[in-house]
Length: 112
Length: 118
Image: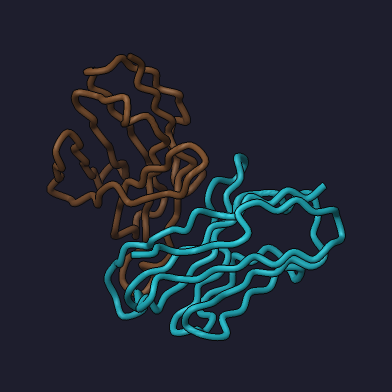
């Protein structure tokens, strides 16, 4: 089983739609979770951290389910500028928190 | 403020040649990471430096790969000899603190070097 699995997509959605991505991870000892965004032919950039209680940043909501070992990202009112690949990232936390394990990403295309 | 700087941005070389990729981390960051990204394997950590010292090189694929960090503002990743399967985008990232002390600090990625080995 891969350490971090994501549906590669692509997800093609119209502007204004709500879209959700899930990600599953295999290491139950994982402590920290993130979503990174990577635009085409660009570097990954941190989008948001994912907390057990769930967290929201504007149109973006991230959720963590430790029991089922998955995290989710919800994007409301999609914009054209949201088109990118979204990478799910987990780390063991603590002294190993530099060890980011990346999923291969889910590609989102927002269509006019 | 300048972000992580990488050079060259693109490199095309022939199999067997030596390739050197360069990275300048963000000033004041004391953790530096080299990653490789391919379609097949995604983004993988190759090596991690803290305060110029290699801490974890378990991701370096084989002896043909080597990395150095002679000072706080410069690192190199060298492939000798290069092979077609080394073709990938190589990212350098830096972080402001020592994760070995616990806690996560955001990693800031450079623009990457797109390497093609013919």
